[in-house]
Image (cartoon, rainbow, N blue to C red; front, side, top):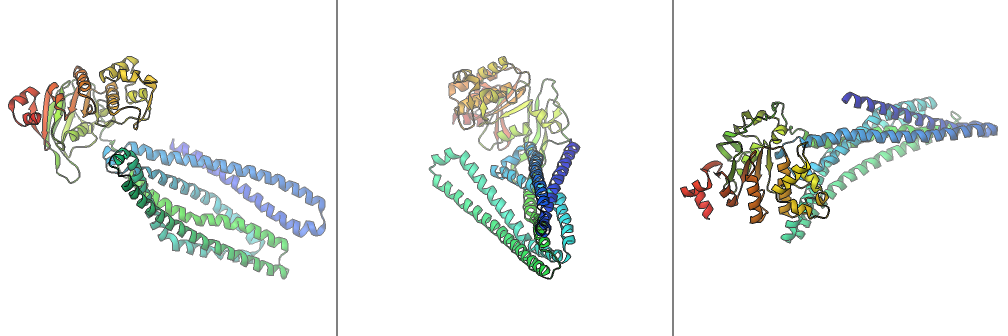
Length: 562
């Protein structure tokens, strides 16, 4: 596939270069037409020849515009091909990154990398064209100018070292200004996204003014850095234009003296001056690559910050999850810590037989959610091993593992789309209408859906369309439609009233072919499950049925009573 894409791009570049060269050659021919008109046709009164040549030139110019359209069309195609390779590869890499990557980075920091990718695409397209096209045109037109008049051509070449000196002087400032502008833009985008997502909290705390002032400061900072960058570019462009204009004046001055001394004709001077534009423009395009390449270099560095984060899918995880039953869960002497903090779990061991319904209880920070994320391999243990059945999950393909053990967080994400789309997201391929109806009945959301205007085709989103409790039940039904034999429900019924929660818990406990781990603060769930595990500072403090632990009158007993 890579070879095929390269061959297509090589063909595109060849066609663009051929079209552009033909356009340039027609323009050169048009310049010589002016010389013939001034030096030959007018003095010799060659009226008929002038008419024929003029009509021929008109036809040639029509062809030139058709070629210009073809060049623009092919350039657009090439830009889209580059977008597919650069931007889609970035998105694909994002989907392969571990969960903790997104937990430690602001959304805006990730999203603004798309702008960086576009900057790289623009620089790549311009560099490819300059290497194959502008350089070729500069050489061709330069050769024509040298033949036309050597003295004028040598004078024109004075601009080359001056341009290179201008570029060199601006290289370091441009690199610094690009870095500062991109970083400031990422910070601003992150703040805007966060404030939009947290608008309910902002309004609840009446902190609109404070939030606006923060964004206002960051926006002003971005404008200052953007202004400094644009000012530097404007200064550099002004110096370049001044150089070009001065060289043009010098060329006309020397050319006029050569005409006066009868060394060249007026037509030759006019033609040389017209051709000079076709010589300096592609050369300036090559010089102007400096700013684009420096911006692209900074953008590439920022994009590589994401690419350097390794995919969570590792070659060492080559095993597929075995379908043999039972899938007992064995956590063997596992420890885990976030960064350099103290261990969240400390030499933690537990065995959960297949089909068991258990509740993990304990105060916040005791390690319940950490254990859940370890079981689905969102994070890896600092020490110890986790087995599902007889397989160590560190050797199992993560996607394959997560098809059989599913983690449902307290605030599940509802995607924009129909209720049916949300229900069947991640569902097994042979899911039937009966399966969907059974899942929504277990999650006690069937009546709510059927009472909506378009039933299962009703459009919903994260922001609206359903209450928090309804969204939790949609997410629960979605989890039940998956092929997962092990469900981990992290406060997944916290937004429900007691009666609805009781009905759903009873439905879940009736499932015989699933292991269900409830992470619960409401101890009404703990009363119903087969086994309660009390976590305290990353270790198991108590383990047993609700009745047994109440009878012991120890830590769990006091937790229930308070």
